[in-house]
Length: 82
Image (cartoon, rainbow, N blue to C red):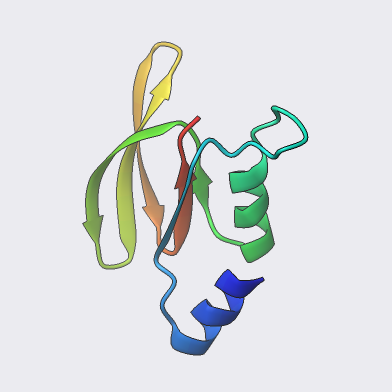
């Protein structure tokens, strides 16, 4: 995968932002988590806002049924909106 090759060669990978995470063949929402699993990096779904970015971590706010969660993920990470 191009992302992995570039990241390893240049040590650049910090954050990958995806869209809705849906493949063309269905409404499964697994593209973002699949990429994260393949790259072995943490991921967060339904992110609506980036709260903070600092060296080594990103803090995001994501929608939940009863409000919002605030998560701090180590970088590199991937997040996507649903």
